[in-house]
Amino acid sequence: MPVTIERIASSEALPAAADVVVIGGGIVGAAAAYYLARRGRSVALVEKGVVGGEQSSRNWGWCRKQNRDARELPLAIRAMELWETLSEELGRDSGFRRCGLVYATNDPAQLAQWERWRETAKAFGVETTMLTGAETAAMTAASGRSWLGGLHSVTDGKAEPALAAPLMADGARRAGASVHQGCAARGLDVSNDAVTGVVTEKGTIRTNAVILAGGAWASAFCRHQGIAFPQASIRATSLRTEAAPEFLDAFYTPEIALTRRLDGSYTIAISGKGTLEITPQGLRYARDFLPMFIKRLKAVELGISSSFFKGPEALGSWKLDEVTPFETIRVLDPAPSRRAMATLLERAHAMFPALKSVAVRESWGAYIDSTPDAVPVISPVAGLSGFVLAAGFSGHGFGLGPAAGHLAADLATGDTPIVDPRPFRHSRLVDGSRGAIGEF
Image (cartoon, rainbow, N blue to C red):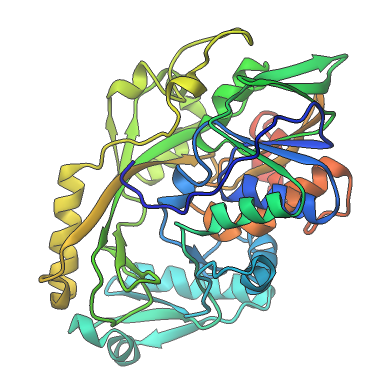
């Protein structure tokens, strides 16, 4: 696995029963387990590979309110509040810093879009500032570029993808949860349309409440339970440099994005750029995703690879007493695209000459799980009592992670939701109500 992450200990014994079982040890699942354990609930977190091993350690690390969909903003605002206290609660530095985010562009249409978004920001009390060309150039002096303008969010920031999910999962364990890595959930025991247990490769845990935070694997798991969940995964490539001169903390342009890590290295990526691979699951939900694909036609290319035959979007069914696809692929670790890496380096070196002499430490591929409207599902599912789905974060999950996990925990236990959960309801993707979300 090319991505360096914090490794944590697993609990020894699988519990016979738990108040809640959380499936998936990414940032959302770890957060759900953490907040459940802090409330005194008995909780088991099961992860087929290692905590934080997939998309939760392969993202930019941005924690932001800026440029979010209005439906996500209440959750993003609460997430920032939770990030603020997390390191102190855990007794370890999660890397969270309110360093501010700087956006820059020479595209008038992009600038106009950011200006329009500020009206949304005002409605939610979000602090964000439009920058003139001169102001943008001053804030990005290391680029040596002139800009038409930019956008600056002073109170947004970043955290450390290599640390956040593992530290939250370990915090859950220290608060009384059990954490089981290398322990795939194969499926659910169901009686009278209600969850009664989770069948894992190491045994069954009796429970009446399950949170599925399975990332790119969530739709396949749902399908096995007879639940439709339209989900597609974009394969993206990122890289990380060795320690480099300090010139920016978090910077975005349409061409490239950079984030400075705790050790002085930089994560480099391109927003929205990736490959939509043709898979059986993709074909099943092609009609749902067609409008998004048309909208992003210039940024996303079609491709076909081994993911057609194996992985979360391949064909396949299984029985609960046999090896499942979750055990076959413990960590979803696609190879980085060489062409994408070359583009990343070319653009980074052109924009920030100081990086030309800095070596690449690691590179990785990742699957960004998305919904047709690019807003996650955090929701109970009709017809299966006790089951809460938390997936489809569409590249926004890391920053939302603490609040998204908190909300999933609230829904699983009947506690007062941290935000209004209706914009994240599962039914909008399957009953034709997606377009009416803004009315709530």
